[in-house]
Image (cartoon, rainbow, N blue to C red):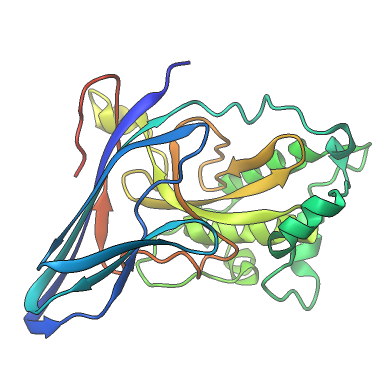
Amino acid sequence: MAPVRYDIVHTTIYRYREPVRFGEHRVMFRPRDSHDLRVLATDLQVSPEAAVRLIQDPHSNSIAIVQPQGEATELRIACSFTIEHAHSQNLELPLDPAAEFFPFAYGVDERFDLEHYLRPQHDDPKGELTAWARQFLRTDGPTRTRELLLTMNQHIRDTFTYAARDEEGTQTPLQTLALQRGTCRDFALLMIEAARRLGVAARFVSGYLYDPALDAADPATATELVGAGSTHAWLQAYLPGAGWVPFDPTNNLTGGNTLIRVGVARDPHQPPRCRAPGSARPRRTWGWKSRCR
């Protein structure tokens, strides 16, 4: 399957009633290159004029350090990039024989490298989250590792209610379980912590979600994916033999070429981003340019 080309523009705007001076901003917008995702071009435009430098954080995410100069009543940060995204055959990749069935154990070297992604970050004093995670184990025979995660991924999409929330921060997994609703970042964190309590390494991913319905001839008749056209969150679980496999519990997605990863982290509070209302609309193109606003 030929790679899909995306041209994405993400604009974030701060507006103020009177001129203000600006502090330093940490902006994460450049997608993570890999065998299935190739960055062709990037650009960052800031108004008013700003000093910009690029660094890599401990997770090798690309971070732009932006320091606007002078005073203004508006700060505009426009991030744009062009990528090619190949289809990820995550469901077809074979697992190591020793990891085919749950429970399994990581090798010594892998476990050393994955330690931070195996250790739960949120309390579960009464074992509620652990009990919730264990409900996906088969009682009539061995549980296949991939099937366990696929079932959990689908269960969250089918039984929890998505509720958009503009406020900063993420619900704890126990809050999400109690409320039975949340945002994409809440659902991702719930599944991350549940997987870790079953001994599966998992990490948080932020980026963009493309939905073909956005380009449909009659969008009103198309079923849109939740979270498309803006920043999105999901997770990756590390499965020996297959590596980091993406799971989007908000939409019950795994792999493909619609999830455009920008940053990974141990916990949702880590990835920096523009902390003001922003919009980003990825559009798919097949050899011609299609901008998104």
